[in-house]
Image 1 (cartoon, protein in one colour):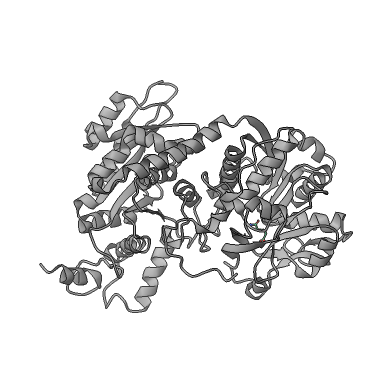
Image 2 (cartoon, rainbow, N blue to C red):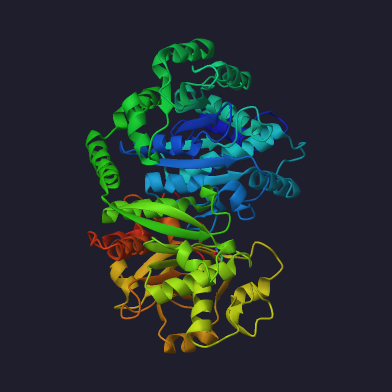
Length: 600
Ligand code: GLN
């Protein structure tokens, strides 16, 4: 049969065929390999960490990998999700607000991702409904199969083309058996048939329970849930068994027997001390070799590149494990017990600790009952303080008290987004004498609004989805502490905010000694501030979210600066890492083509 004709007949909706599998321009079926990871039994097994580790060990072999997370919820993106319920909202360079797993992929793969790497049911269904209105389905009744599944397949293939990927990693959100993700599973089943049997590798992540009352591992929930996958027409090639302790041979044999998967492809994935050791754990178990064999990629493996990548990574792990000097950093926030909502900050501190030989401990300080009276007590024995991003008025007074204390007592300070805005309010009130300084976010009729809506936001107010989002270049002031830390004149950081320092107040703030050491290259938007060395050893804040771009192999300079200052404060002179890390910030490999730049 003529392949081109077959393809054309598959690609467009028509009355003559039941098939519908739209292909993007430039796509060659059978060229790209796909690894699909499903979760069974329950969520929270670390599917994102597992998938990204697996992607990393294939990337180490010299293969171009591109991850995509398929998320079952109907929200268009994660922008409107509550971080205390769903974990932090991660922002990509192109402004996409997405699941925190995308942060895991970026850190593991040391790669900038974009909107093609994240699809929700909301996006997929909107796109299908829009095409229906445009008459693209040529009189057909629009159905879950083949039209919605066709849209899913289209997105996977679009990513393959844009990223020129050898292997696309598909992580299906939720758990097999959920109504929400059933059509994703159907789409990859159809697609594996279309692309050819050796182009797809299905990996099921499952969970082995070990109830206290029994004191032994049981495989029944895993067996039953793997059957659900079979019922959906998917026969997994690889099964990874999550458990707190190493999964016994007996349990793996049962899984192999009931799921019809050879023993050599049933792996134990037990808990370990850092997510960054998981790639080596998977390699040690031989999962990489199994995937390479199943996908027929042996010819493309670059053994030397793999050795180099392993060495670089294990150097990082050794630095992190052997970090000698303990420092304690306080994170001031609301509901501070929810670690997932501050995931990237925790990672960024770990990266900075490894770079400076500091063993970073965290202390969560709840801002809601922090006051000028108790702040000294609450911040006792800390070597550094972070006020992270946030919204609304809750806890603001506590944060103001905290910033006043650290500023006056020389305790190292790093403010992130809201943490910069509140630092400006504190400085305006207590140093510039603007007693009524505030933010219109907290107090709409504030008489001295040092923090106010961005001009473009004023026009958009009330429309929703109106934040300034994504990566922007920040021009640094020569000779500033920030420029020294970064070792460059510009740095790219990611933003997610509506408010900013009102340009009217910049002069008075500067006259009183506040230094704006990072600015937007072409707008009066203040992006980094600091106090000069004669006034404070380390007082720095940014309108951006530098935690989002910190990577194990490229620690973010502001966090490195904080760790360094905290070491000094604790009485240890830590190693000062070369500031080369920031220079490469904006030039890292990207797995997607940038889809339109951010305005400024
Ligand atoms: N609420 C502030 C703003 O919208 C800060 C946002 C943040 O910290 N991400 O500008």
